Length: 187
Image 1 (cartoon, one colour):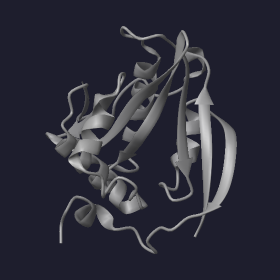
Image 2 (cartoon, helix red, strand yellow; image 1 turned 90 degrees about the horizontal axis):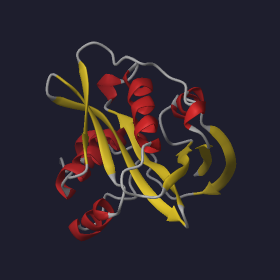
Image 3 (cartoon, helix red, strand yellow; image 1 turned 45 degrees about the vertical axis):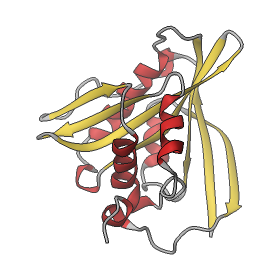
């Protein structure tokens, strides 16, 4: 299957555009201590409808190592106590500066179209620019691809991220998404 992957970046926090308010009834919680089990659940819950499969066969050890990387943090959106989406940040240091990657970002299917994605992404980018005991952030970046949600690229660009690379590859993905049920371990 042909897949287009875009790399987007932001070089200054002044470039961020986005909503200041979360939609009514929604909250966002930040965590630096997400367990491998919860991270795996969020990944499957959000990514199941979009062919997120690259981490489904990861071991608990692989999840633990990813979560232990410096600068890793999750912003998790909730409504009525139930996860509605999440954004995972991860840092990579380069000399005296670092890049912050939006490693994963998405919403559960029932939350799409309610304005939550834009608000959660805005908060995630704001948080990515804030340094806490690590080198100064030089850029915030993300990959998205043609297998992600239909408005993913547009949402990133609307927040102020700019496309800096585009690659088309042949990839081996399931013909149809697995869905959240199967991706979270259901049968």
